[in-house]
Image (cartoon, rainbow, N blue to C red):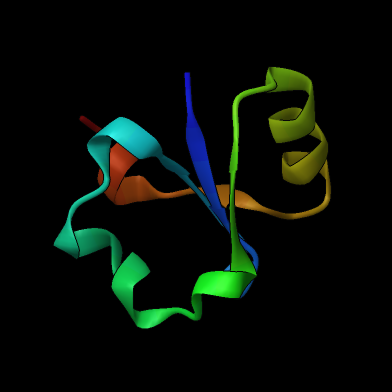
Length: 58
């Protein structure tokens, strides 16, 4: 699965489910990155990153 990580808000988005409700468009593009590796996502979660409630509920 592909994820979009927003380092400004410390939110992890599911790339295929992002919508306007996620407010990704309000952050600076160079503060975001794409990732696929689950181990990296787990590492971010252990560093207080959260999964976006908007795109992870779908």
